[in-house]
Amino acid sequence: MNKISLRQIENAFLPAKEILKAENFAGRRTHVIDSFSALISEGANIAVVGNRGIGKSSLARQIINISQGNNELLEKLEIQIDEKLDFLTIYIACGNAVNNTQDLLVRLLTTRDCLLEWIYEIPTAKKEIDKINAGVDLKLIKVGGEGISETSHQSVINEHQIDVIFQNVITDLLKSKIAKDGILIVVDEFDQISNPTGFARLLKSLATNTPGLKFCIIGVASDIQTLIKEHESADRLFAGSVINLPSMAPDELTEIINNAEKSIERFITFTDGAISKMISLANGHPYIIHLIGKQAFRSAYFGGIYELDENYIEQALRDIAEKEADPVLEGRYKKAVASSYQREAVLKSLASCVQADGEVHTGDAYKIAIDKQVDNPSHYVGQMVSDEYGAEIIKVRERYYRFKDSLFWTYVKARPWIFTN
Ligand SMILES: Nc1ncnc2c1ncn2[C@@H]1O[C@H](COP(=O)(O)OP(=O)(O)OP(=O)(O)O)[C@@H](O)[C@H]1O
Ligand SMILES: [Mg+2]
Image 1 (tube, rainbow, N blue to C red):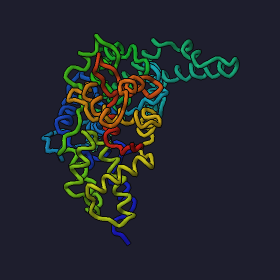
Image 2: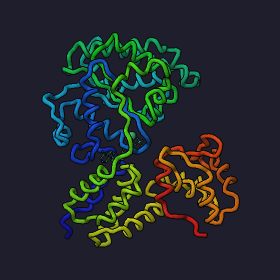
Image 3: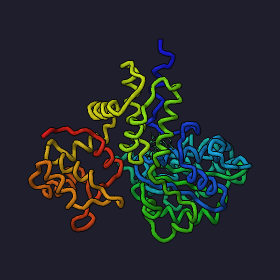
Image 4: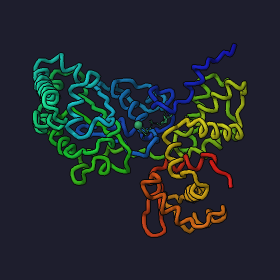
């Protein structure tokens, strides 16, 4: 019998989940300090922006913990804080069901994990919700009766009314002093809202009318303007509290690996060579460390291997590709390559010469591609910017391209070849 269970092995690395517990959360010290500062600074909303898979939701979870008085992470990072915060914190992830600002508000108001549970405690707030429910019922009758599409809902309760109901509910909740520091609403995957028009305006009016309410919005973007797709008013609403999450540094990535080893009492470990290899493959993305680590631990456990070296990491990469451990990244890879050695060679060539600023000069990439016996690399680059091949590559200007997403770029570099020449 192994003293470490398969369950422990399977949960040592967590590619599919954001980090909840402070003990598993690596690095990010300055970002945690910035988050805490934003939480205690009056009138500041918070925004967390960064690339895909860089750790935004994980930081959001830590912000939630801290906002609810759990200071474990602050203690672990030796950040001296003498108070425990007390927010009523609500988390919502915008899947594809949230199309605009009103959808977001309706969801916040009518979902049990969100505000609904609290609203029931307060009669005045409950009255406000009944207005929405009346609207939704009407919509159902209409849809059922006449086969009208969903949009009829809009005409039943209009935009403005929802804003007002939301504001009234928040005011009632704040008045009832449910939590000393106010209400924190964390909106993850904000970038999934296709039309967030009006959100900045809403924040502005809430800032004056309901001090004590704070939003923390999270999404894939390079800055806050891109995230909320509104240019003028955003700055002041998020002044000093935009947290731009960069790639993780090698020592932070090493900490993730060390934490995983520790969680299984170092039953299986990586050699220094394997750790360096994982770090170079990850290219700053914690997700890639978790993806590789999980695969490596799983097969080592079943194979009875206890020390994993660089070759073992190579093998893990092959397994990840073969088993489609990340079906989305693998699907994008296959779409870009589309069963052609030539296209794969061009994609790999582009990935191998991304400069520090993220751009690729075609001169560099073509040279490598021609060495790999590709006849006409520019032809394939032309294809790869098109939707048919996933549009993973974007033309910046004459002779300069970039990968749309650095996580995909990292995957392209790490993934073993499909074709051999
Ligand atoms: N500080 C951290 N310490 C350890 N692991 C982390 C850390 N931050 C992120 N991770 C891990 O990296 C992966 C991606 O993290 P997370 O889901 O938080 O990123 P994200 O930016 O929200 O991604 P997406 O853009 O896909 O929403 C997950 O496997 C998560 O467990
Ligand atoms: Mg996320």
